[in-house]
Every structure is written in C-alpha cells, then in structure tokens.
Image 1: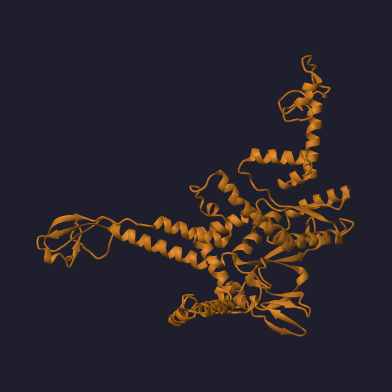
Image 2: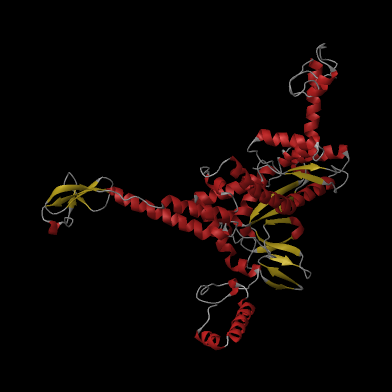
Length: 506
C-alpha cells in the first residue's frame, strides 16, 4: 500500500507517527482482505457461484449435460477417444472375481459356477459378464451414471444360476419424482426413507426417448426396491445422481469443433478461387456481372479451380492461400485442457508422443494409474461388482447349488501393460524373493486366478516329467544361466562343476 499525500505530510513533521499510521493501515488491510477468491470487484464481476446443493444443480442441468455429452461422443473424435481410454483402463479385459472362503472345495465349486453363469448373465442375451462391465463403465463415464437391475429367473429357464442383469440408462430414472413422500422424500426419482437410506428407484417401463414407449403409453414410472438395483456413478459430493465425466470441458470440446469447422471453411473457400483475370483499367477491376465457364454457362457459386474474370480481363493473377498461423499451437493447448477435464494424459487422448521420452511417459502414467486404481477399488467394485456377487451367491444358494449365500470374494482388476516389461518383471521377481509380495499377489496383479495358474503349472510340470522333457523355462531343472540345477537327479554329472559353482549358478 503506497503512502498518500496526508501520510507524506505527517511524515515530514512526525516520522514516528507516520510509521505507526502506515503499519496500522497494513494490519487493517490484512484483517479485511480474506480470500482473494471471495473478493468482489471488476475482475469478479459476472462470476455466478450459487450455493445450491449438488442435487439442485444436477436436477436443473443433469439431463442437458447427458444429452450434450452423448452428442459429443457420437460426433467428436476427442470426446469418443477420452471415453474409450477411461473404459479401457478401468475395465480392460474385465475385473475378475475369485471365491475366497478358505474352503478349497467350496471355492472351486463357486468359481466354476460363476464362470458358467457369466455367459448367460446378460438379460439382453448379447454380452457376458465382462462385456457388461465395459458397457456399464462406458455409461458411467459418458452419461455420468447407469442402473443395473437384478432379474431373477425361473429354474426352468435353463441358466447356470437363475439370475440375469439388466442394464438401464440413466434416462429410465424418473427425474420428475421429487419432493416429500410420507416420512421420507424423493430426489429425482430416488426414494429415501426417514434416515436417508435409499428405499426404491422410480423407473420407467420404457426409455422416455423411445417412440415405441410414447406410442404405447409406457412412460409412467413405478418404484423398484433399492435392493434390486445397483446405481453406479462417481460421487463427488453428497449428491444422489451422477454427471458426465466430461462435464467440465463440454464447452471446450464444442469450441474446438467450431474453430476447426471455421478453419476448414476458410481453407476450402481460398482453394476455390484459383486465379483472377484483371483488365487494363485499374479503376474497373470489379468482378464481371456474370462469370462463365468454358462452355459459356453462368457460374454462381465457388468451386475448386474457379477462375474469375474482371471487366476487360487480360492479366491473370493466381491466388495465394494464406498460411494458418498458430493452428497447431491452439489445438494442442485446447487438447491439453480437454485431457485435463477428462483426467486422462494428453498423450493417451491424442496419441501424440512427440513431446515425451521414456522417463516422462512413465512418470505421467503413475498418477493416471493411481486414479484408475481409486476408481476400480472405491467406485466400480463397491457399486457394481460387490452387489452382483451378492446377488449371484444368493441366487445360487436359493437354487440349492451352494451350501451358503455368504461366500467372500477377491477381485482382480486388469493389469497395466508395462512400458518396459523386462524391468517390471525383474521388479516383481525381486519383491517375491525378498518377501514383500507373494507369488499369488503377483499372479493376481496380472489379472489371472492364482489357484488356476498354479494348478496349470503343476499339471504342465507333471506332463513334462512324464515325457522326460526339460525346458529352459523350468527352474526345477535349469538355472537362470541355462545350466542344469545341481540338485536335479535327472541332470548329467559334470565333474568340472564344484558345489560352490553350482550354488553360484542358482
């Protein structure tokens, strides 16, 4: 804060009083300043920041956000790629379950039963369990939320377990149902009991945007118990419903689209006029009233290769299209903004690796993979996988196929492909040898069932032994250097190899 004329006048006769005055003014300013972000003035004029609840904001904008995001995913390649990158990393080949009751016989039975059921679990009869995961995750990212309804079937339907899953878009939820309901309340189609627990979902029988449903009067809604529905969405506040993940950059995507269209139209227009034939009279160089082609036909629109004739045209001058300065820089900056809004690395969104090296791409993927881990373990598995496993064990128990409905489960998300597979494999080997990670954990991180893998290894080893084969990949017989293990009774004796050398080979 600079001194004013009055401060200077006091300082000329009473410097100590002037200093105290300036210090007091600084202290007063510090007390009244607060947060700059809450300051009111010219810079913040027009900044609308309502204090409404998340449910109120979503109730007003949720449907339009979904519609606009879906339109962008249909027509904008960057929006479509961002959704695909997120789905591919969250789901990949699928998040796989493994029964973990501790009873080996029960676990094998439940795993085998679940494997058979996955092929028939889709109520539409098209996808398996892991294909449904991809569809559900895509809806969660693109539309912000998705509903999965439990459909119990008859034993006579011929399913491995009398249960199927029906995937419903967010539009099936009747958003008009809001307000008080007895001792509870309704929030955009979700019914809550007096303590705030979800009691039911008010669902349309048909999609509200489907002409068939409108023609058949099937647009009414009815409550479905919350125990029959899995509602999958990212909960950023205490809201009841979700929003599209690309909501922060919807305008940026649209602006980039408009900019590219404008650039394309400008380029096409410039390319249409190849040359202009001017006349001798510089003052009469307007375009002739009628432009004709070689056949004398009148031309009234631009087209590639057009040559326009001025009055008395004799001198031809070719058009030189202007360069598009800054196009690449603007698009790159816009795509950085869009990638940040979707929470995906710029390189994965665009495929542009020109600005990174091995170390920087590895460092950039660390944070992205940490975010994917959080989505898998804190969102998708609790909201979708866990309810489905509970429905599956309950249905199998009710059908008399397993002795109990309470079967613990372990989930194995897909592994992340290594930038340098050799280094990652050596790191896993070192972790296993030092005891900081088990072999089962390493196998599970690869997206496989440890019990199934170990059983397959044992079967393969038994078959090799029966055939008398020794492979270089068999550590029971061969060291890492390719020599026979010293303790292998099938290895030929080597008189030149001492016990110390054999230990060193191990």
